[in-house]
Image (cartoon, rainbow, N blue to C red; front, side, top):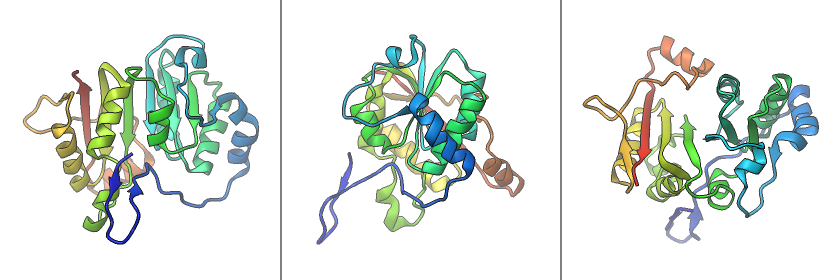
Length: 234
């Protein structure tokens, strides 16, 4: 997707993730063994027919990097008339989400365990999504690592192309520097309009984004969280 020129090294493609090792609990393994065949989406470089996938035409939301899946599960449960696709590479997190989604008998949720950039590029049709969600991505807070951040101009254009007209790109981070970076990228990108109505680019957390345990702990410690929603304007 996006490439950096590193002296003396080959071009490096920016990925949407860093794979971290983790053991599976029994429930997470059950998610893979029993639920993946029903809700999991194997990556292939071909577009998905969303209506066929869910057996209906409905607004479709994609979340990139859902972690252990708690907030995505809650959103899917509270919005049964919306289709949700989660993308995550942390296998224990995928297993946990699948296991719990099956227990809750959710039918409006599907999952990729693959790089989100490649999924958006190859699997998601253009102008098909009501919303793309990117919550608390790796901030790569050291300045020399900023080039590894997922939110870059090429990624913003990829997201825009997959959103339907007036579709939303919702971002959230607990790193103010990354929030400023996100705003800078999206303000310079073509075809996006910030939905904030105040004299700054941030919004209050919308009701549809549940608070995570991590975020609640941060609030108690006085940590900030910055939400941004940009709408596709063209």
